Image (cartoon, rainbow, N blue to C red; front, side, top):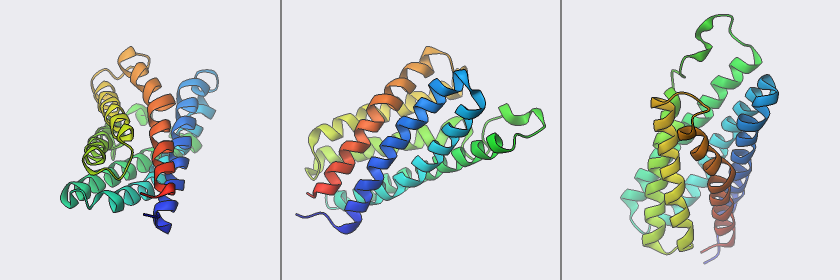
Length: 201
């Protein structure tokens, strides 16, 4: 079956989300070490853009997966949208602080809307797990995309727990999942998803 115009749009947004996710990782992990202000500004920008772009990809995925199990597909869509909006808000909050740093010492406090990445990593991980499960059940997407989605989901939840419990951004509990998710798994998953949405069923 040929993909709809929104599925093609969602596919394009998925590809752009993968690119934004990779650039976020480059800015957050590499650029921030040598130029903290620039790295903070760019990572916040790409986090915000990735969150916004992924909303279209999630709706396109829902459109294709709702025939497999409408209730679970809707639940995954809702969780995914909350996580995506959380990422956009988190990035927007960080971007506002990077552009106009507050004079008070409260900058190190967790985001009031997305504390320690609860929405951006935790809720998004749960949503992605459900999407991966529906991909495996439904047959509208390549099976490997579902398995890669499971890996991405687990890495996201581990990232959230690491940011919640460990806090130190240099701890291997945070660095290893961040490198794997940010540089490999997430960009590949979104690029593959975008191509699958673009090509049709």
